[in-house]
Image (cartoon, rainbow, N blue to C red; front, top):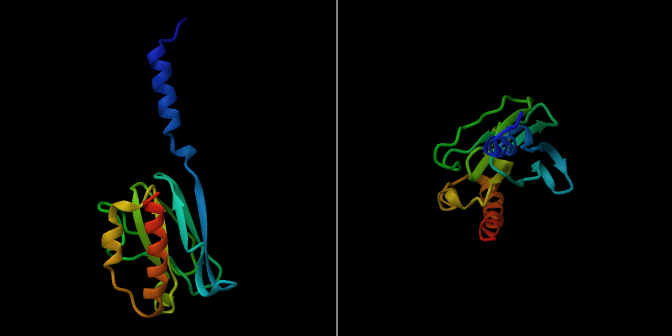
Length: 150
């Protein structure tokens, strides 16, 4: 039996786009580290569209949730429960800001850059955060801007 060439090419394309090939990354929520206290490690991560990130708490007082205004258009908001891992699939290219709600003012924020990340960078830069989070996020957005220009 002969299999049509077009069928083989189409099947290969579907397999290449399969979510099974997407990567799963991990971000840890830390109360202390060599980089300071109340941090995400890594605080900035770049992933491909379709990849997942699992946010893993290391202390019962941490969670991970998206920051309003720091998501690409049409992206799904996420909110993990306290002391529970949360797994998020990032399907849209852009910048995703996230925070630990109890430790936001202490600067516990991070960024996921999906693809080139440039789609909503300007909007993310307009979001105002309290306390130390403003400085930490400003540094992360500067790094993300450099990534987007590559």
